[in-house]
Image 1 (cartoon, helix red, strand yellow):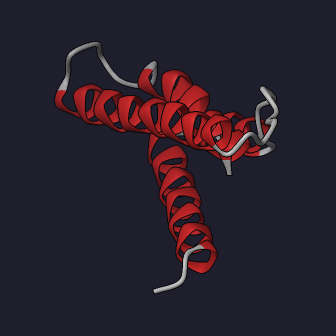
Image 2 (cartoon, rainbow, N blue to C red):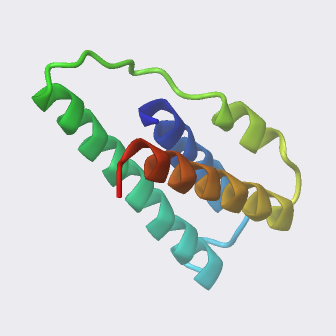
Amino acid sequence: MLEAERAGAKALVVFMDDHPRNSDAWKVLRQVQADEAHNCALIGKLLEKKGVPYSHATGEFYDKAIAVKGPRQRIEFLIRGLKWAVKQFEQAFPT
């Protein structure tokens, strides 16, 4: 999950370039990117606290995401990726 979150954070930086800096869309993407980066830090700290070594690699999502062409298509791909991540987290933690 950490590698997937890292991939999302890095892809969002690329996606932001599809929009004028400080435009509404850019600001939304920047906030999502900040959240993704924050999640990376949280997951890393949780793993460290448990004494679990973790990778500093970037997940496959990054290459797939930046290969998508068109701002709308990229956002749609990102949304699918975020839904996947939520599903993975929900399955990992008991209710």
